[in-house]
Image 1 (cartoon, rainbow, N blue to C red):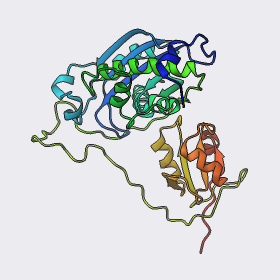
Image 2 (cartoon, rainbow, N blue to C red; image 1 turned 180 degrees about the horizontal axis):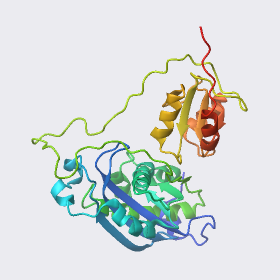
Image 3 (spheres, rainbow, N blue to C red; image 1 turned 180 degrees about the vertical axis):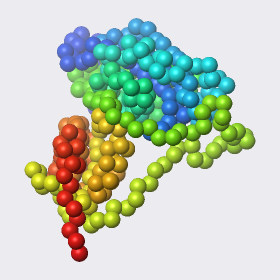
Image 4 (cartoon, rainbow, N blue to C red; image 1 turned 120 degrees about the vertical axis):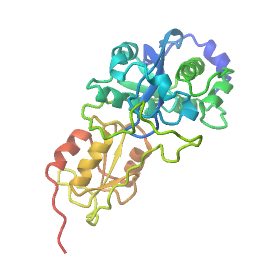
Length: 330
């Protein structure tokens, strides 16, 4: 168990050499949680190597569609109509993210939304690493009742003024991240950093109505603002595991983990079209795991090690997709 975090952190004299030189604490509010949803506001607090605030920035963003759950973020179509488009704020956001580790609460969500927006704008997101404050709180062994931002804030005595407002959420997280970082440094803990792979290939799909065309909610919350997509069942039986150096075979069960340069659903579409079974979880029946970060420690990577499931990276998988063996007849 860690010693008293505040005392230990503030008394630390040696700073771990491997720690990053700067951070960008980020929060984005969005039209929803799916791949086709859009960012409607973003805030960035830039911090130095020891977590001290350098500056902060906030903007609303016109998503060119229905703003989604207004009852959560409070941003209506009228409020967003005059806001800049993402491609108009991309350069400013790039300047604030470049050379820094992206820090967010449930960082994979904020990162994926940002990566997709850059891909739509035909640009590359400048982030190379991210740090999730949920993962960091677990590493520190903080006695939190749950992993909500409000619980992390309360632990460090940070007052939250406007929940689900990007600027206030980013401020709260920045104020809670600094003592977390100091505590990690004082105890020489390895930070839970993850590689970020910007999307280089993206295929957009029709979105919800554009701003100015949204249907009224009639005073009630819509029940389907998170679009889901069900894949057809694989028509071929599972022929077993992939043999390293061999060919993929139709019916093989393939799982994906971590960031990919090709947008995940596009990659999954190609696997499905090739006759493979795309699995959302990993089991003893999984034929192959595709990941660019085999040392990430995700649940799928851990299970792949336990089960002896073969692992390849995205580039190798792309080559294998070009020569998939047909399923056996009969």
